[in-house]
Image 1 (cartoon, rainbow, N blue to C red):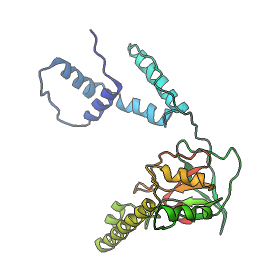
Image 2 (spheres, rainbow, N blue to C red):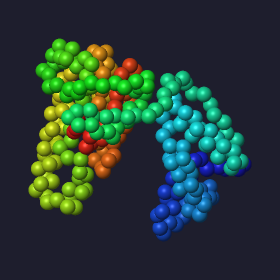
Image 3 (cartoon, rainbow, N blue to C red):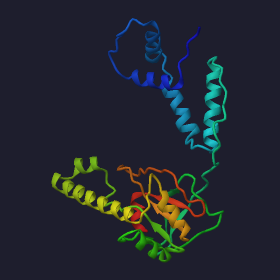
Image 4 (cartoon, rainbow, N blue to C red):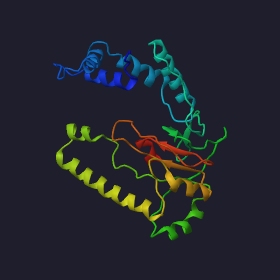
Amino acid sequence: MKRFLSFAALLSAGIASRVSAQTYTTGDQTVRQIWAEGMNSSQAYKLAQVLSDSIGPRLTGTPGIKRGNDWLVATYKSWGVDARNEQYGKWKGWRRGATHIDLMAPRVRTLEGTLLAWSAGTAGKDVSGSTVILPQVADSTAFVAWLPQAKGKFVLVSMPQPTCRPDDNWRQFGDSASFARMRSMRDTATQRWNGRVAATGYGLGLGTGTLGKRLQDAGVAGVIASRWSNGWGVNKVFDSRTDKVPSIDLSCDDYWLV
């Protein structure tokens, strides 16, 4: 019987190939064959380049994941491995189109941002409105009482970072005292903001969560978040439960402007 390495095994083997001075630690011929394949014939770079760069994001229910599936099946078949796509469940389709976000006042500036996954779009129409920060409320009852004030506005649901400069850059070019003050200020602000969100009775999850859905139901124009990844120009972009209004993630710097 022929033995074939899975795509995941090849990637793992490719990673292992970067480690020097590897030696056999087992007499098992199958394990030795896998080790030799990864060390001497790794295709990890080639495969990862196509999957990550050429095909790109593969969100469930999007054309991207179908392209990824089709490419993997074709790749297996080119290796002599019988493969086919299988239907697994039913998923809501979604395709991210062009996202253009502009600050209109006090000056015009195009902002860096994108729609969260599965967010509603604007049906090709321009949507404008003022912004309002998620308020500090005593409890969920107070939050519901506040909601009419958010109608027709874009609600900011993320904490504005005290700095968009990565920690390693602070350590390299700053002094320890200023870095410690910034960390303390950020930790305190994060704790307080988490309490602000919790007081609404809803959550953000990894995107805009149940809070975004409740804001949508209250008639807001949209929800704006910013999930910074503590790097230069890097944000985490997850999902949204808003299916009638857009949920947007803005860059760390541009979030401050709105």
